[in-house]
Length: 488
Image 1 (spheres, rainbow, N blue to C red):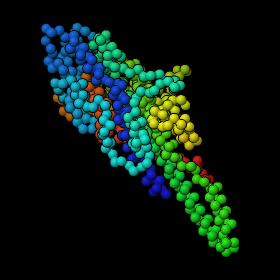
Image 2: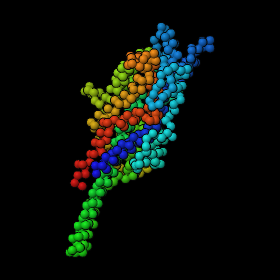
Image 3: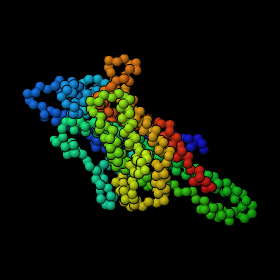
Image 4: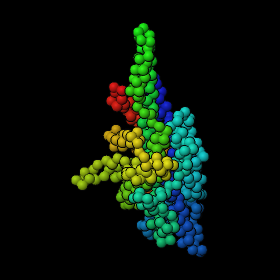
């Protein structure tokens, strides 16, 4: 029995990793499309070229943001505005989360264009596909059109109470024709940091939410199999006993009828049906298409509060950048109560639809029939209630904090090794003293966003799923059934 439990738990952890990798392309497509840093940079470059007069000689390596460092020095004496070209760490990408450091005649935006602007749905995660029916619900024909290829735009109305998202384009939302270069560079600064942290939060929350979903379903299957096995064993023993006794006295007819009644009274709890599994797993649609936008808005407000006063010319080391990111994280993860105290938020509304109407809307958007979407039986309701309780629990709060810490470490490992680099310094630890202008850090952060979403193997996802506390949280969920099924 213990071996079976361990084997099922390990299999479930593999299912979780595979499912997260199957969902990441959809999340990445949404984020890279909505928070399009490269489009803003393109507008900025276009504006810079349009303002240059024909008689004005072009600066060296015009297409390179790295060459703008020389222009920056000349402009420092004339103006303090932030409409300057970013000093860039341009370079080609290495494997994994690598961000090579070096000079190039191309801009960092041009280099990022080598990366696909949207994750390719044809890529297959570099993990072994587990043999399980649960994963098929997310990757099979029934949900492939709804979760992995569904449109990010909700069909508003029908009593959902949702307002349409404000899709921003470079021409309309940014107002590039009216904004100065300084304003556009401010947009680049805010959008780059916002996108980076949005990826960290949304990926971490998606990983934990998927872990909860698949672990609850795996636990239900395991408990049902154990109860069914125990019931069959009791019936076999009863049958043998009744047959031996009745053969000596009454021929066994009456006792066999009693045994049949016993089987009817000793029903095993109903197993979660395929339809209920599909409905429950379809709830991922919410964070993939709606919930992450709520997270991005919280991140945007925190970034603006912290980075508004940080000039693009400000030189930062890894320690200073980490302090700024930590300041943003505190504003995102905590809210101030009416009493003036800080309280940690639980991101429940970003993970699950908050109302019955939005719940039904999400299910229909995910491919569930309107009838099944509106009909919530006891089994589905029980799953939903337990999921809410887990998300608002202290265990989830702790695991989420540790997961965000680990994701932030992954970010800084890549940035510190490949951006905070002085090519003239030996690799003896002195790299920690490297300080770069904030403008020079933006290329590395922008490139990291693409690698964090498109990288195979995915270091960010692997780090989250491999976290010991995440496995412990899953083990707690998997083993919490003694009281519920006692005396059955």
